[in-house]
Length: 290
Image (cartoon, rainbow, N blue to C red; front, side):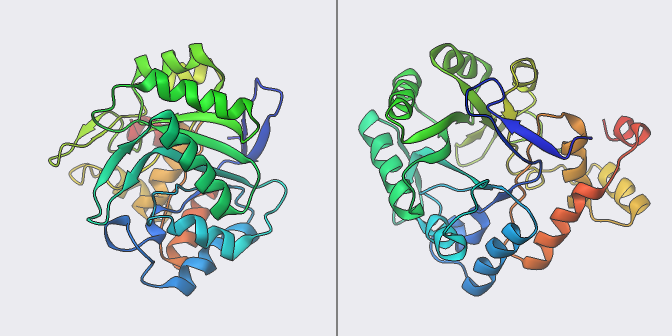
């Protein structure tokens, strides 16, 4: 199993990072909104991530609202030269904590400028264009993303929460280096939520990503897992680890293009997640888990 992965492998600016990143969404308050309940621990996790060699951090200006970007800057600015900060645009939050579409060309430009300001940088290494429920102007949004990239404010463009058709459309318009879709052992395909939201599954686009060297960044990999499935627990017992750790190890073994970003607000849990990269699942383990 490779320990590193290259983002933008077929571009003029490839970036190689360790295959386990960190997602910051859980550093926010209740409902992924507002300040963290334990701010010192949130800052400690970010600092520890850098100390332990994590070089891919996933964020968004609508996490918080704008909380995680400010935490990142406070904890680790000035940034290591090899750090990839990957943000998302296409949504915003209202004071009632609701999520709304924010993806007109003007909206996207505002979000990019906001990310640049709060992260204290001149160019964002990687930006995912997030598809929200009810969005009808995907192509217009992608066109705006590639235009902003041409201005030098974005190095690499990716997409998030996309269908096969949307991914293929984006690939025809410009160079797409990554896809951030929901993917975990217990939830590999699209999931509809009772509140009307939809998270597109990674399994449905994995073959396209593998064929075109597009990195898969799986989110919520354990959050929606099927608790009736006892296979993770059995493998976890075999190795003396947690189910969450087995899920991360499974993702790393599933495909060499996977770059998991397990998130947590607990420093102890963060250390556990990092240790999952050292779990070597056998072929029999993978067959059992499939």
